Amino acid sequence: MTSDSMNIAGKTAIVTGGTGVLCSQMAIALAKAGANIVIIALGKAQVQKVVKEIESLGVKALGFEADVLNESSLREVREDVLEQLGSIDILVNGAGGNAPKATTSEEQSFFDLSFSAVSDVFALNFLGTFLPSQIFGEVMVQQKEGVIVNISSASSFHPMTRVVAYSAAKAAINNFTEWLAVHMGQEYSPAIRVNAIAPGFFIAEQNHRLLVQPDGEYTERGQKILANTPMARFGEPDDLIGALLWLVSDASRFVTGTVVNVDGGFNAYSGV
Ligand SMILES: NC(=O)c1ccc[n+]([C@@H]2O[C@H](COP(=O)([O-])OP(=O)(O)OC[C@H]3O[C@@H](n4cnc5c(N)ncnc54)[C@H](O)[C@@H]3O)[C@@H](O)[C@H]2O)c1
Image (tube, rainbow, N blue to C red):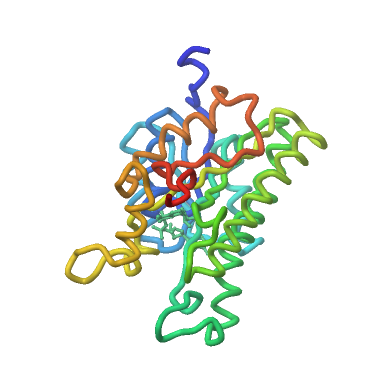
């Protein structure tokens, strides 16, 4: 195995949620490794900003303001990408997140949770992974090769308190990762691989309120997480890059259907 096996120069990588705290860094890392990048996210200005940054790295970059739950928008993106870049080799399903109305708290019991908020969070995380995999995965089937990386969570294995819909959706992503890996391998091509990364705790927009107090100190929940993370720190976006580059490249060519923890040991620790 040489460093050549991690070469992704000239490949086309789609990153959904590519303007987010974690996935913008993933998109930039893929660009630095030589891939041309397609960003799909909400918010035109944010999309343009990341596209500009990626273009400055010397690769091609396309940006689309599109909803990962909108089938016709994703089909249009697919046509545009194929016309302009010619292939779809890598898909990172990064769009996701939680919502306060789907989260229990002292003011909001389980019985108060809004059905539509729970449904939206479940849909964004699970169906927002399923649909792009269908639409862009079809191109990989025609090409007989491609790599999908889903973004799960530490909350997928043992559900975190409060975030009920998010945890259930991320557990569904792990299950779907295994299902699709088997399906692609058996039905279409062993060179289409599907894996997931389960990040531990990274302070980001979706969880800031739960982890950091207005005065900047960690909340009780934030402190509990650190106490249960053997490496005793929160993750930084850069911590995810090694696993990502391994999974999208030939370096992991015999790896499919796995969920890779990047969590400072959180999932391994029983708390005792
Ligand atoms: N931050 C963490 O600690 C953490 C931990 C584990 C897993 N994750 C997961 O990692 C992924 C990225 O997280 P993040 O913190 O970078 O997210 P973020 O909140 O910073 O960004 C979310 C991204 O998703 C996009 N998005 C949201 N809804 C969309 C929709 N309907 N269609 C298209 N794009 C949409 C946004 O435009 C943005 O680009 C998510 O799946 C998240 O659940 C995050």
